[in-house]
Amino acid sequence: MPKPTTVREFFKQFHDDDACLAHLFDVRFGQDHVCPKCEREARWYPIKAERAFSCQWCGHHIHPTVGTIFEKSRTSLQTWFYVIFLFTTTRHGVSAKEIQRQTGVTYKTAWRMGQKVREHMAEIDGEAPLGGAGHTVEIDETMVGGVRKGKRGRGAAGKTVVFGMLQREGNLMLKVVPNVRRATLQPIIEANVAKGTMVDTDELKSYNGLSEAGYDHGTVNHSTGQYVAEDGTTVNAIENFWRHLKCSIKGTHTSVSPEYLERYAKEFEYRFNRRMRPETMLSELLSTYPKQDA
Image (cartoon, rainbow, N blue to C red; front, top):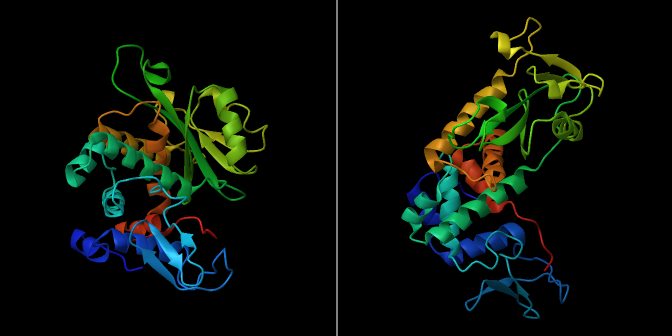
């Protein structure tokens, strides 16, 4: 599909709901799609009364929004597409208030739309395994949450732990976890990082035992002011990502509930892993849906 780069180009391509629905039909089915009812290649014609296309031979209906984030939503498809456009034109995400201001929907609808777009990003991104022979994965955890009185650091009250694994020159994977105990973190590492990978961490004791688990484990001692060990071990790359994540959440959303934090984390995981130009990201988000036979 052509890639809109400006608001004017976006609305030129997706000028109404019919254009948006036609786009969904084309990327999921396409003309000459074999009808699941009469089993013939068919031309498909839009039905004005509903979000559907009809087979030229038997009249069977196909609903392009089924199985997408637009299913069962009464909000116009053009509004949905525009919200996705907004997500692709910023590095720091889009707040529900901004969606409300720009589209005129209620705050409740704006919040729900933002959550659905983040879920869609996470589904597209997936969770491919990290590392392997010759690769290095930096592993670290951070605390995200509002400012509250209490002890600082990993035990800070009112904060939520985000655990991250970043393959150098590769992908990132984030998980919201209940704590930083070894029993919590190491199973996640073993499930998602290939054995034989060089793994760099800080001195947190929860990472003890990674060598025995089949990893080439190196540590950097932050407590002594060390940020790059003599053997090159460092977690600087993932710590730079933490700064971007926290600044984006604080600047765009002010704060995020622990209940929904993983969705926001997955949005930034998707952005990091894709490293796409805005128009390419828009094309992917508007075109990546499961193929269906009915």
